[in-house]
View 1 (cartoon, rainbow, N blue to C red):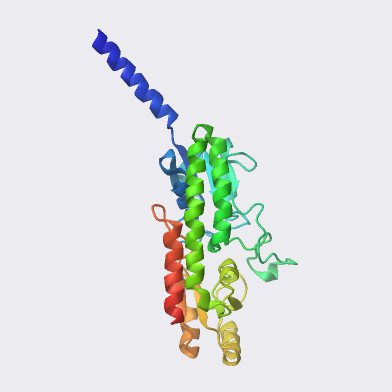
View 2: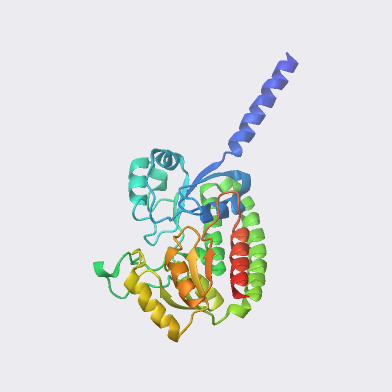
Length: 298
């Protein structure tokens, strides 16, 4: 009898412990925010991502599997600034999950409260795929990563107050490591200051600001419009007067136009990652960016 009571009490203790350590289900619209949640929350969360690192987050579909993930989510973390405007509203509507709707604690838009670059002074359809709130690609500035990490830590603590101290400790540890790493990356890339670049799409203004690069032009004649022969011809003519140092594009973007201009001018093409898949880290992402830029600058 005593043995049976002991087993029952042990079972109840295990069940109570499991309940106390229940995971938060987190759905990240982009994997960079998913890996940041993993850094800050460890085994207290279960993270999934709506997109992959080598996938354009502007253009995905609200597939049934993704809707299912949204339906189970306790926290949705998205870039915002209209990056996901083509699919997120539909996903939210079809999920039927009240916890992650706009304005709820389970909905975190990381660009809210951030001063974004490239906010257009005027808008009309002739301008192409312009983000009215400003450029959303803030993940390429380490200082803004630190800002987002603070927001995430606070939101995790709000949703899971029993683990608030844990999130605070993880957050402080991340901020220390991140600050030290960012100082090292900036020092290694100091020689790039003032370099001039052409970009495929305007993914890189925050990287350019951080490293003090000068962006001369884009291969796209308008945001979201594929490079045209006429536009590339104009860039070639301009490059003969002011030769850029690099042509930058995301590693998921078609490099045909960049290679054409490179063949004509001798300017190196640098394909950079914009994100990292779950299980990786933002330290790895920035480390890869640094190495590729240094290799092209030699």
